[in-house]
Image (cartoon, rainbow, N blue to C red; front, top):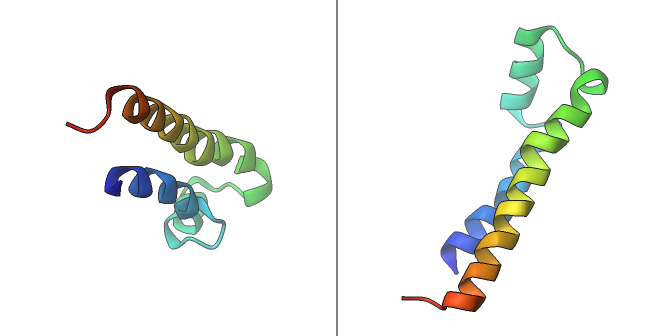
Length: 64
């Protein structure tokens, strides 16, 4: 249960006001508008796919 909760909460770390995201965009010289689709794919879609896989494997295999 803890691992599922950690993976599920990983998507909240990519919010636009996150300090790491703001710093990364400043260093790269980009804006939120230009890089939003890239951030969504890397920081939201990936963890959601991983969460679905973990839940499916947990349902099929159970916990050992």
